[in-house]
Image (tube, rainbow, N blue to C red; front, side, top):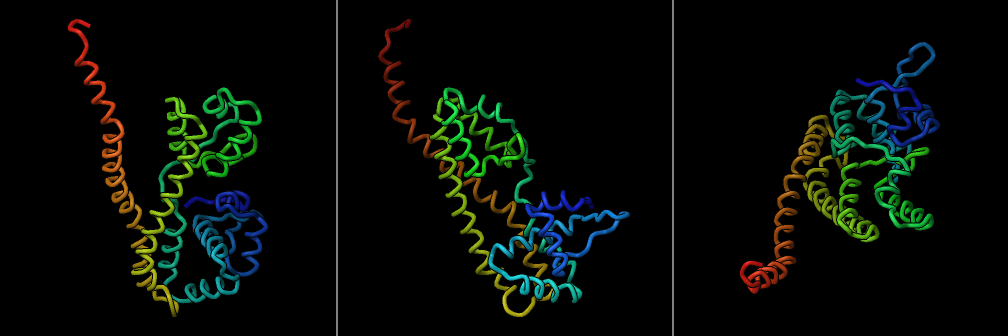
Length: 254
């Protein structure tokens, strides 16, 4: 199991050192393992910290979060609870984030743009979550998405149009994700409502969430493939007929 100093733990969890210490003072986060005078945290702390952040973002108070975690931890189902924490906080992609320098971004995407246009475009790209400021560079959560954007721009599609479609697709994907989650919430997540659930119920819900990861991809990929096939054929079909007619009218030997 990986171990982290408090500043590294804060960075990985998207939190702050101050928040981590506050959660420890409130009894929400277990103390670290001491190595001399240095506290060392592990993946259990990271999962717990991410879960606390999500619960706070949903409007839960510190008191409610503490009661919930305390009720689970004083029972025999700690392993099941930690398993649920892990599936809730683990990323849904195996893609490794990258970094990119400002100069490289301008070289790939900013050809022909003045400084003001580059600044506006960078701001919009950050708003879309495609890049994140990180010191003198930019963190790239999904290098694949950045690569797709570069390929589209290289094909002659204006950068503004690429960013427009990125925003639209992100919104469409949010709708798709919401439909999946609503389906599972209606039929599975309700097991966690009411009294504190037992370990078996928590384990069942965690397993459903874990199985959702490949299932979502298995459903979306075929639908996208079939839709693209139909759309491309419809968009290019008329052009193909025109090309065939033009070739058919050429004199022999041309």
